[in-house]
Length: 150
Image 1 (cartoon, one colour):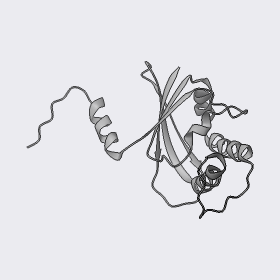
Image 2: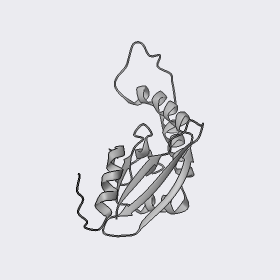
Image 3: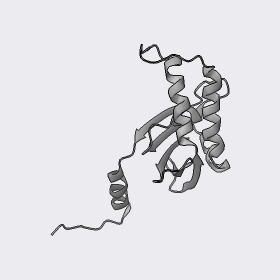
Image 4: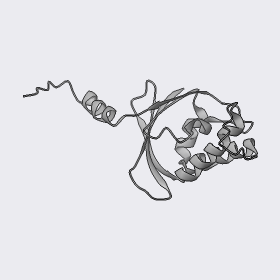
């Protein structure tokens, strides 16, 4: 099954960030909608600590901290997944293909599809959602009306 997840971050500057999610299955007109909260700043900071340890790029200006990269990846994955509803986790676990469309591409959403041995369980894609896309989608979903600009 192929699923598309539209994840939108609500505006706010609190410690926990709120997200609205709508999941669509290819060929199925119904959708699953839910919302969840994650500690976005903490997750992004941990992910940034992880990047120098797992990439081949070393910056002289950055102090390379030793970290258990497997533990850190699992920790980030679990913090994101545990915030999801049971229905949303079931969608992710049953999917053959996941496509996340989000306005918050800094969060490592691709970690949600990892198995415990850190292998990616299904094919995964991520696209950035632009604010204008929402208005275009609303117009597209309307009946076949004709609009005139005067």
